[in-house]
Image (cartoon, rainbow, N blue to C red):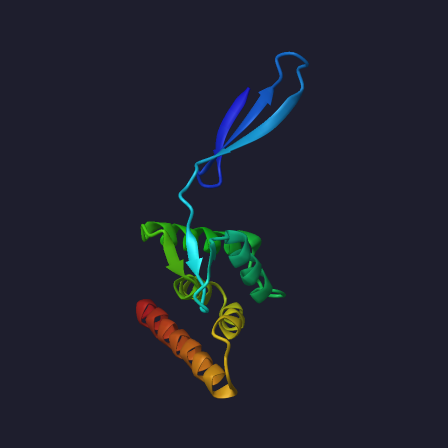
Length: 150
């Protein structure tokens, strides 16, 4: 009956109708991708799970002005970057760094929250170093904006 791409063209959504009983239903066709394994910090491997990344981002963005669309875009971009590496295995550190890079551009507080869990800050000094990096980046960005408006 009807067919259209969804999820940035990675999925085809089809509306169908049974020829016998005329019941209408929807099917989704996904492109099959090779399995991707994540090498965790302890050396174990598990299958890549974009939902796990999304849950971490959602938790970090709680009560922050970050939309679900922005969070989904971050996860999409992380997956695209990982798949573009062309490897069957990727370390959790690479994934975490990609997430943090993208979060830093969206919301600094969400970034700090994610980094505090991801990097497992051992003490307040490590946390302060990370916070200072955010402040320095913010100052650099504001200098750039000031020079462009001059």
